[in-house]
Image: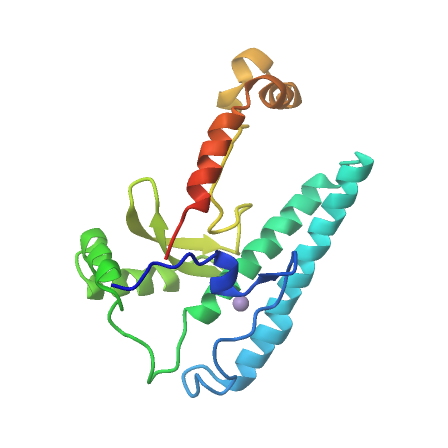
Length: 223
Ligand code: MN
């Protein structure tokens, strides 16, 4: 038995160093995936496209930090959208580089007993998992991603389609505290005054001890 090591997501993905988001080094050379994934595409994809998401994310977060200093939240909607778009693009590309390996080194069947048995429990077999993953990914509407994910509440694996990167979420983020702003959540009492509902939620209802419990749970993940 080897000792379990604590590995942070930043260490696994390399996309956050020195207090800011950074373009991670690829885990292989630009030619390493030839001919299946060509070096010219990989250069552009990593050095231009992915780098653009990193720059966009840091810029949006910098402007949000300015807004917190001045209290001027006039641009908060656009900045939140930009942070979600670029943040999700950054995280998904970090995962994408790690999701590929040169043909001679990859492990075509799930490479640990734990993952293999989770796949069999969730999908029936590894081949069925691959078939659903391929079908779902081919059928994403517009631009997006196919994603194999662990859904922690049921502790099982799911295959998701993401349109664009985000739809205002960051994949892999664990929610700690949520406020429902569908009209059904507040309309009987607050009618069209969503802002009043949100203010009341933040000032009077928000359960920060629950958020602290979720945070403790999110931080204890091990590899
Ligand atoms: Mn991409």
